Length: 138
Image (cartoon, one colour):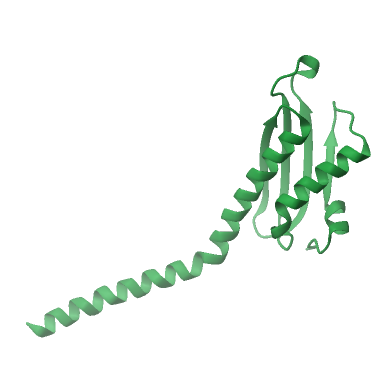
């Protein structure tokens, strides 16, 4: 399981695909940077990110650019997020922001799972002790 350790490795782990949009290298690099900046804090749990871009309406315009992010997560398989926008960059920003929030919640659940159960046990023990103490006093 390979983790991302620096910007160079991160850019290699973020791949950009588009069937119907012609993207130059500068645009691809900008997209990779947007995704990297949004997901940087999770670099130790992300193996790879695929960015798929689609223009749903062609030259008609409107909110028709679609960005699909597939994030391969070390512990939980993969997460697929979709974001729409007027431009490719806006769609990537939307999808990256949603992905950051989803990964944040997943990471929080993984790291806070055991303490939540421990607090519940302590609370139950306190209830049991109070009941026993009340019985002894009568």
